[in-house]
Image (cartoon, rainbow, N blue to C red; front, side, top):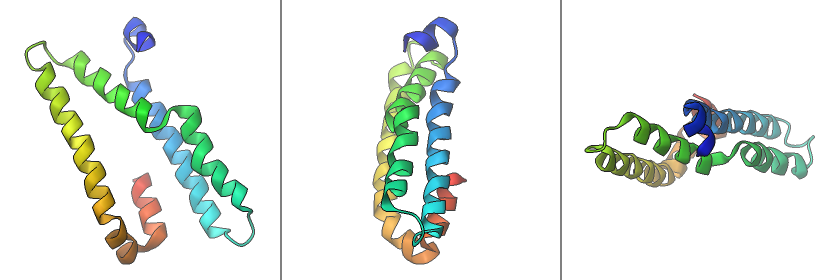
Length: 117
């Protein structure tokens, strides 16, 4: 957006949502471990608040597109943005398709730690 254009800082726009997602996943790991002790409101908090405060996937996608447009020349910009969009869509589809298989194979903690990695 305007801030990243003015100060030429595009990576914080991508890093902030990643940090928020890490906080959310760590919180959800704790909620899973202490499932019987914590109320469900704590799970709802960690599921929504960190991503809401840091922008979530929308801000991350915006940062990626800003970064790609900044490092690309005019001739290859459309192609590169198309490739990035295709990869984002394909990874969403692949993640949804493999979610059940991954859960059966490595369990809930394995998925959480895979997201953190």
